[in-house]
Image 1 (cartoon, rainbow, N blue to C red):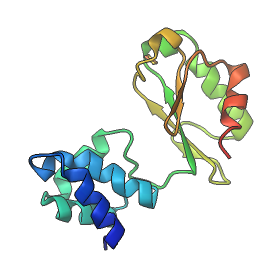
Image 2 (image 1 turned 90 degrees about the vertical axis):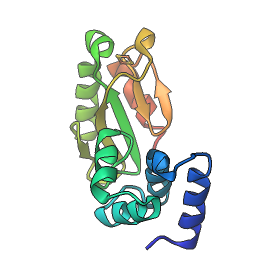
Image 3 (image 1 turned 90 degrees about the horizontal axis):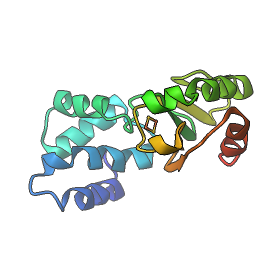
Length: 154
Ligand code: FES
């Protein structure tokens, strides 16, 4: 059930939309900030609030990479795997993350610290390869630099 504060935050999130159904992504991200991810129960509660079907909302949630439909770690590293980053060596950066933290794409470290997910172009192609951790975007990432970057997120 939505808490009082969640309900207030949802009201805030939808108020700039003429139709609250248009606020689906904002609403999902609002609840995700509170709960860490969007469970089936959360999805149903948000759908009810937005007056949409759970199926429709789920298709938005599934399409939008920044909405998590499974639990994630305390931090999420999004590894761009689009063409510029691929050409500039994103795979080597991913391999280094795997070596350092024993985590593959789509997985979370055993201590719950870091989830690593693929993402399409982060709009930083001129600084490829690019990685986004939580809200922070890093460009010109190399296997040598990635440890220093990840170590900022405990
Ligand atoms: S292809 Fe990676 S940032 Fe554009």
